[in-house]
Image (cartoon, rainbow, N blue to C red; front, side, top):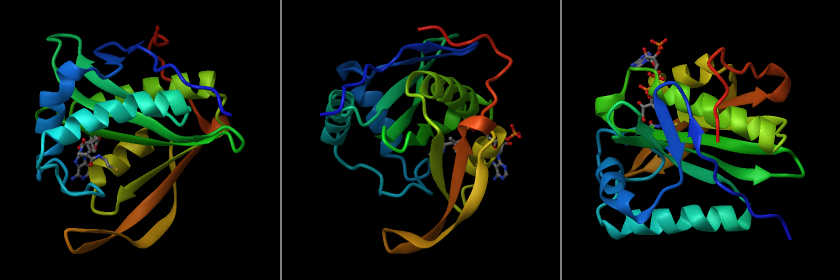
Amino acid sequence: MRASLTAPSLHTARLRLRSFNGADADDLFALQSSGHILRYWDAPPWSERSRAEKFIATCRQMEQEGTGVRLAVDRVSDGAFIGWCTLCDWNPDFRSASLGYCYDDAAWGRGYATEAARALLGWSFDTLELNRVQAEADTRNAASARVLEKLGFVREGTLREDCVVNGDVSDSWVYGLLRREWQPSADPAPTR
Ligand SMILES: CC(C)(COP(=O)(O)OP(=O)(O)OC[C@H]1O[C@@H](n2cnc3c(N)ncnc32)[C@H](O)[C@@H]1OP(=O)(O)O)[C@@H](O)C(=O)NCCC(=O)NCCS
């Protein structure tokens, strides 16, 4: 039986990454029910608020089962919830996992997704002793591809007709970041 995981609390210059709690359900639902924000997501926007409660319950389940963590991201300056990031599909035998993220459109373009992912990757490489992190992005999602490239991910290929969402067939890029390629930021190390 694999060990459970404890979601860390991480701090960057502008952000706080923390465990989800029940009070996040409204903000999370607002985020995940937006067709604009999720236009390149691999699942349709939510239409029922109960999806937010289920998502938060699944965060705890992921930790208990040791498959990964999802962290809510708050902006330090005003305490606002701006989105979330995840390290999931952890495979201790392969020392691999996957990265994902979603942010409110009002917070886009300020480097927040990259800053939060860098903190989560730092924790992941240090704590889980990963060798590889994988991420996938719809080939139309230039902003997500750019985030991954800023973090040092290498585009390794294309998954042709990978997703069908609301009848739209889309291709995905596969990105990989290896431990030996990982370059922690010059920022101060995140603290627990
Ligand atoms: C993708 C996403 C996480 C990016 O968040 P963000 O906080 O804006 O990301 P950052 O500011 O750290 O970096 C975005 C980069 O993409 C660039 N960018 C944004 N739109 C772009 C476009 N249409 N074409 C090319 N580059 C673009 C920005 O200029 C920036 O690069 P730079 O720092 O070199 O200028 C955000 O748009 C999001 O949450 N989208 C909805 C959910 C989603 O698609 N998640 C990813 C699923 S794979």
